[in-house]
Amino acid sequence: MSSAVFRSAYIVDRKHDYLWFLGLPFAAVAFAMFAQQHLPGTALVAITLWVTVPHFFLTGVRVYGSPIEFSRWRERLILSPLLLILLAFFLIRFAPLTLVLLVALWDHQHSFMQQHGFARIYDFKAGAGARSTKNFDLALNWFLFGNMLAVSPLFTNVWVRMLHEWRLPISAGMVQQVHQFCWAATALYALVYAGHVVWCIRKGYTLNPLKYFFLFASYFLWYYTSFNSSFLVGYAVAHRIMHDVQYIAMIYFYNRKRVERTGGESSFLNYLARSGNFKIFLLVCAASSLVWFTLTEGHLRNLGFGIIGFDANFDLFSYSLISSVAMIHYWYDAFIWKVRQPQIRLGL
Amino acid sequence: MVNISNYLRANWIPLVIVGLCAAFALVERYQRRIYEHIQPRLHPRAQPQLLGGALSGLAEVLREL
Image (cartoon, chains in turn red, blue):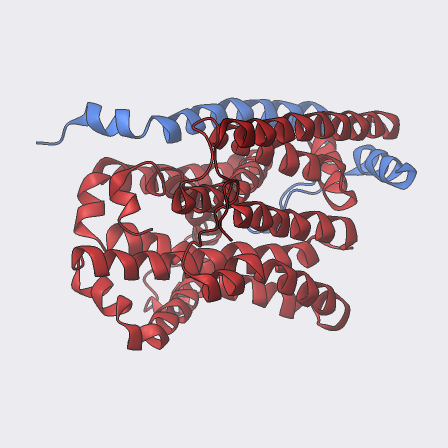
């Protein structure tokens, strides 16, 4: 679609965008609703792990597999994993509520920032929006996601429980007031956002309709599943399929484009980018899940010739890897995907 | 030669997070010692669980909602 007001542009191309970015959230919702009714809990957990682990792993492939990326972020890529692994270990041992709070909040922020990043790519590809549009988009994501966390029955149970764990008990009446306030604030911001869109049109800026459809699809998934899932794992199946599969697709196409445009930065990344090697890419993803299970479930003990894994802290350490790898992923994603940076644009 | 200040400057966000977590951890340990409302850990991988009055208080709020 191209007119004076609207200009469509895709992240990858029409076929892949409808498959991975625009259609996937609806398929994920349908699957999650079916799965929570008909599959055992263990199957739901397995589904989330088989997509979640590779998406953590691919962040590492992107930054540690490329000498250029590594030298660019050297100080962060060396020190921060050590910091975050130690942090998770000590929190899990001495302050587990703090760890749960940190990982939960960071995970939520990371989730909507990914969708915000993809929305930014839609605007970048179309040359759409004003300079201020990214700020309005970011605020929209904070309001919509924050409201979902605050008002949905699923997450209301979670945050009310967390407040009780922190000895900040809240009454049912107060919870209802929080709900009303959040709905009102979100509705008010929706009006502000609509005003910005109208302002863009009047000033002659183009809009990319696919960005709005993408945001609608993403928030449809989050709101629908958080209002219609009885258990967190039902929401998690839909959310993880959308978040992780979109991320894996993004990494794959980003690497391919980068190799096409720059000739590649390492033989491994070049190898993964070859069109015939998509199956190898998927096998590497699957292998990462197996390594993850070995490390985080304490199975390293069985492979350690009786030398490692028998210390009392080993279980805590292997368990803390789950949180620390997640946090490393959140932290790296906060700086390796800045759309405004020319080096990043080489892969978009 | 490793330049320590470069490392610290580049990692200021994780360092701030570590600092905030330390503050929260102190509050958590204080609350748990005063109120004794969380079950002692039975297994290294066990999640924190509410106890006694805190648990029934939560159940009451969730029932009302």
